[in-house]
Length: 167
Image: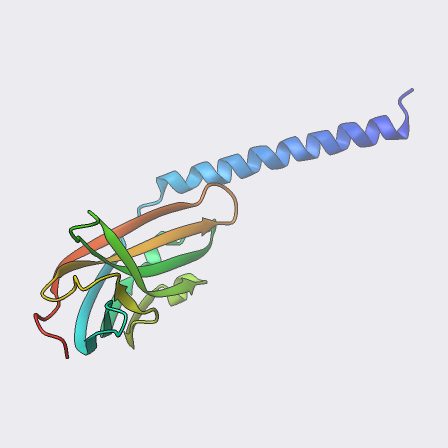
């Protein structure tokens, strides 16, 4: 007859194959979820806008962030990483992105929020290109599933500008 090792190998192979199949179905089921997150970001105050001694512009902002990311959560979502980036153009670069704030949202209950905060990371341009500059604030998110492929998306909000003079 068959030995214990042969039977254990057959059982383990079957279990791993079944688990892989279940994980694939779980990951595929996320494709059918209706995701419609929304966000609004307002600049409440420009706290500081100055040229540093080494020639770079630095900006400190107070932001009002309101977001509803609950639709990103399904039964397969482990957490959502979200961050806000300022995006603008300069003569040297077609696209500059500076991360201003980030957070990890662990559950659906925490996915609808409104906070007022100053930028967590410094908004610095390598040069003196920020005076009078128009820029976008973009809310990026990365959905980290329990099983399957991680995916990302964003909402771009335009119409922001910095003053023409330092403060």
